Image 1: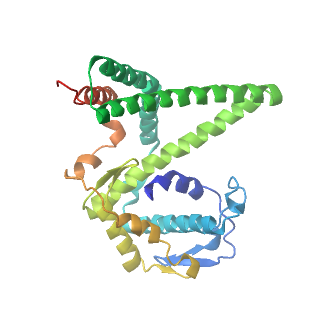
Image 2: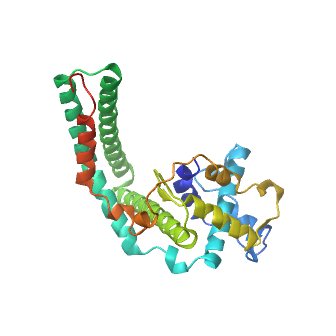
Image 3: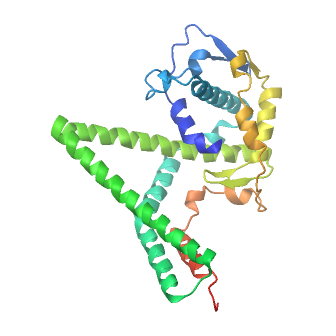
Length: 293
């Protein structure tokens, strides 16, 4: 899915570009040129710049170009303050993420215990019994993966400390912290941009794993980029730069019936009650029909 690639796109966007001294123009939007160097994958991009698959390389360059176009358009079509993130907003997101992560194993253990107790207490039809069994398996796997990751990280640090000294571990964790912070900034920036687009264009919205998305606003934004921004893609290999995005917009979406303002008044991570979410999760398990219910 297009949205599932958002974090990958963010990482590509923040990579340093080449010199603009000689601009090999790829596209123009709002009378601003986008150079080949703006979208060419750096050779040090964790191997992405030297990838053997030309199709994948072209796709990533198109994603970079599409995002560059949208960012330039935002400067002309939206109020900068409406989509510019603040450090406080990123801090709040990270605090929520830390709270959710800290209780993940405990919540999974409660789900496992509840499902196991229900299976011991009640008799279920096959599909409902299998549903509970899958829930147990999935939650156990989640716990196992968390433990395995923690053990691998501990072992990695120990090996690095032994081979390269304690300072190498400190620097590694600094880089990991920086990467995590950039990821958090990406999530907040995405939400604020969606909010800004909804405020300007309105329309219907959907809920995805990446959050609330104003699908109709996306369409209107793309239309303005072309009509008001006078978008011109000069290199044929990038002519279909928005095709993937438009395919996503054209999918059969389940639009939410609630007004969009309901979801954009506050960031979702400021409205989630983790205790209430867990109680709901447990009650849904207990509500699964059993024989004699």
